[in-house]
Image (cartoon, rainbow, N blue to C red; front, side, top):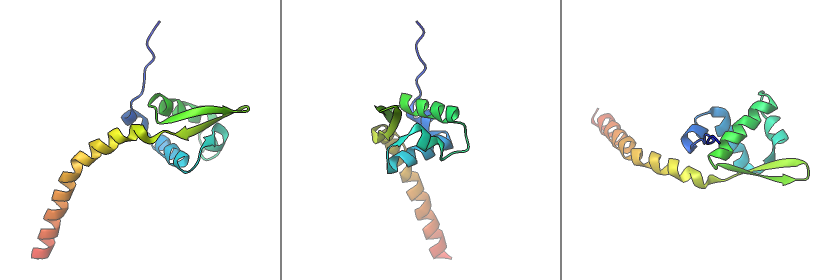
Length: 105
């Protein structure tokens, strides 16, 4: 039995549509239909995006009647937050240098 390829959080958020889906789910849980109605892509494409997000543990689904409802699971995003925050020191340094340069002129 072959191992299933899993997507990590960075792969999952690399796609702009998936980032938008995460924003949408941050506002409220939504069914596949509600999510798909927001985009010009096919429902099949949206389901594939949701599968990637689910493999990265960024969303989870539950059944409500015949509908599958997705909700955001933001804990996995802490890894990204920590990674980005490491680089803030460089941005702060560059902004400080720019401020000093502007003030000198």
